[in-house]
Image 1 (tube, helix red, strand yellow):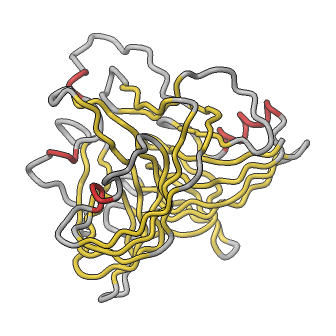
Image 2 (spheres, rainbow, N blue to C red):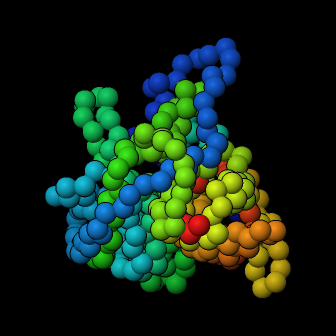
Image 3 (cartoon, rainbow, N blue to C red):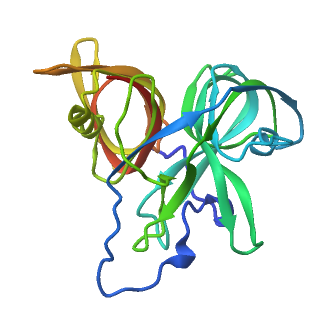
Length: 306
């Protein structure tokens, strides 16, 4: 099947990572890409009404915004000519994004993800950089699309911005690959209490959400509600209409709209997590996630009860 997402010659903003820091090495340097969890503090949400034309969505969101780090939620709106991307881990010479632009008017179902300051070594300054995933339906064709949100030149949205405080969000660079992993600093002790908001980041080959569940079992967590999770998977087992479907496309899956709840009990665990996945051909997969193997990363937020 013909790919929906294609690589263009000018990589530019498509590169995801800091490959300048990676040099040829004779052996692997130890770097923990596994599971990172941190208790963070969320501040009062900010509601922004965006109505723009001949501009940039990713610039418009942060225009005149006195917030450097946080997360974004949006459950509706209209965007035109949406540019989305699919992360190609093994694309040479470096991992990069393949892109697609969905022309015309598009009804937004969901936009979720983090934003934080990342240092620009060329211009010697910090830029606000977001990692957002989107699900939307093209009004003309009726077809649904999802993926990594790159940008849109026009639209009308109501966006919820929630600042994160208490710790600094950073993207630590894996010196072996140049890929950047979400971390909260300082790390501190992890002793969750009821009502805490937990940032999590699962690295390559981890099993989501099973690794999270195993981790929370150590801290007497009874319930965890997922606010959102975005990232990439190599494969996923979806429960749909009482059937178990294994999805394992050649180049993996983009994970978009993720909502649900995890119940941790004394002898067994239960969870119900709805996900929206897309492969490089643009085929959409929806349903309850039994488990998924992380491709490069899955990051998100949840609230816990102990």
